[in-house]
Length: 217
View 1: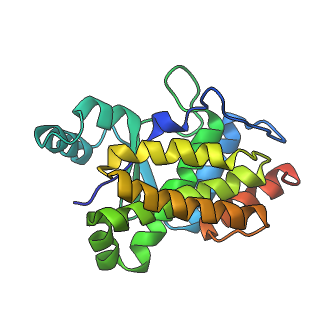
View 2 (view 1 turned 180 degrees about the horizontal axis):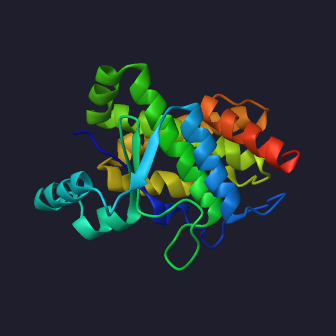
């Protein structure tokens, strides 16, 4: 079993963040984004609370002193191979649920992990077990989020980077490894500002939304 974690709390819009969105998502839009991305990258997603595998993983993580079991089940999206386990249903709204745009960000992030694993499963697992490798794999997924955020008109890339890097503490990454991620993301942000888009997942999501809404930012 191999676990990748994304704290969905970090994807709820936070005070001080700048969000200049050209349009407003509906729950149906988010459902459609997840369905299209899942089809494009041959992934499957399921409810985390209904999975016996995830419950066992939560127990082991708590037993090892890594993460509280309830927090793991209720706040973290988890990707194993090409299967994504979610603590919420795409398109859901309400207290404690990430914003609709944050659910799109999670879709992008987790599908980058699917692609990382698919390129070379053994190398991916090895790199993720090393702190510096884990930092760069997470930075790659966060960078894809930045590409979609920029596309939709959100120019606060540095703010997103600061919050994302701080969130990497939950991935057992120390100061030096988080600095590696930060530098990689700052370089990615500069490329994004110049019109670059590296991630095939971000490109897929942005193109899908362009078709659905008739243009981006």
